[in-house]
Length: 176
Image (tube, rainbow, N blue to C red):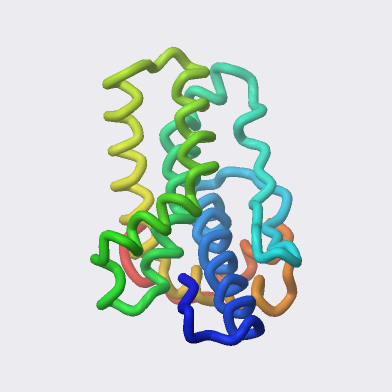
C-alpha cells in the first residue's frame, strides 16, 4: 500500500512486494490444492499474474475443481493483506485497497461460479466459503508464501515446478 512519504523508487519497490505476495498467495494455494498453473509472474509495472489452466478443464472436471479454484482465486488478496503490518490489516481503507487490487480475481471467481449455473445468493454463499477457505490456506502455508514471494520478487517469474519445489522445502505452518 503506497505511502505519500515514499520516494518513487521506494513506492515502486513496495508495489512490487505487494504483487509478489499477492501472486505468491495464488501460486502456493494452487500448489497445495493440486491445481495446475504454468507460471507466476510480476511485470515491470508491478502487476502480476498466475497463469493457470484449471478453468479450461472439461465441465465435469471443472465442476469438481470449482471450490478449490475459487479458493485459489481468493488467496492472492488474503496473502497481500496478511503481508502488511498487523495494525494495518483491520483498517477499512486498507481492506478497500486490497479489494480493489483483487477485483479481477473476484470477477474471475464470480464468472467461474456463473459458468456452472450458480446465481445470486448461491454465488455469494460460494464466494464467502471460498474466501474463508483461502484465508485458512494462506495462514496455514504462510512460510511457503513468504518464500515464494521472495523468490518471485527477486526473479520476476517462477514456473509451477519452481513454486512446487519451494513449497516442498518450506516447513508447514498449520494443517492444510
